[in-house]
Image (cartoon, rainbow, N blue to C red; front, side):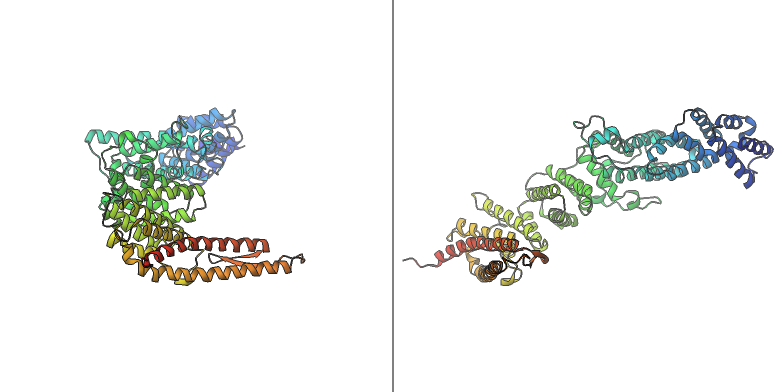
Length: 592
């Protein structure tokens, strides 16, 4: 029945010239043709379509059959495959390229998540054929096709393990490899233009579309991918994809060093209809930088003449972007890029002027968030390692100003304690022969010490919450009083001592005595209550507050453990504070 309907509509339409077919003709051709293909009559459909008398019908209406053909081809039913492939090939040769392009992209867009990889790999070659038929007017269509394809490909999960990439369990690898083959003739066309003219306009439309493809590929999927090095995975489709994307960029007239340094050189005057932020998304450039300096992709086309400090400056904006995110994959790439950028820089060489740049302030702030808030222990540890590496690269003056800035802005006792430990190391270095400097000795050191030796709320400061800073501060003060003799006073600590006593040590002693007395009284009360209620089956309940968060429903045993731990901590503070008081008392005691 359907075959007869198809024959009837085709026979009737043979007499119609050009594109004069009615909507009814289109509907009948579509319905009858689809039914024939679905019922297995693809051989008869093929014979009708290849008839020269029906060429105009195929040109105008043939694209309507794409949906049915694609579904059969995806199912890979052997009986119908050869004829369906032949029908598709004939449509691609004779049909209207614009209509075919729309029809093919509709099939790509409509693919469900389970069939994305199969659909994309099936239709890439037909899409390429149709686009090449468009001749010199294909640029916008190439862009539309690439955008649609990438939007679907980026829905595929990214392989994490070596085995997942080898087995290509999600289909992403074969899609990426197929995409490279798809864009190859278009890239070659641009290369020919460059070869003939020794240059190419930045606004050549096809070049712009390929640039957009590369930029989008960098942000997705490549920014999500953690590439395996060749020692781990000798043949990596994703590594090959990343390499080819960088090669394409270079082939279409984009200088990799210029792309890297856009953030530093601030090239805002980009000719053409695309604004710079759209043409060169920062997230894509961050991925580019990671590929170059961490994964060492395309190193053979990237000159090694840029100074390490300049590379660091270029990368700081990308590092800032990556470390400002919450996704662990982004944080990891940000830490890796920062580490690799710093390693190439000589220790104690970064000048203080760099701290005037916004990124050299914001990156450490973001790094602190990783170190203190990231749920992944390995990333927190990595963050601390990179934080120390960044400190090591600053010269003496820059270290001084960096420490000062961090003490004013970090608002985290653990971070402040870590900074104070670094200050102690710098003072120790400066006190050694031939290492003297103006920043960690004498008049410049004293303002820094005032930030170190302070209690934010005087005697009422929460000593447990500020434990890390307090302990490191006391250890630093004790070290200086022992190491820097009063008659030498290289650090100036002895001149400042009376202020330190009044503003820090005495309030700390007061706060310590109050806190210890309070917790010891609580501990005694809980122990007594436990004895009284020991015969009661219901354990008593108390509420303990830690860092402003209430932790209710604690058994007496848990209460005692928490309170004993606090008392032990106060004893620890008191032991160091007592030693400092002894040193000061010995200094003030008159000689007999």
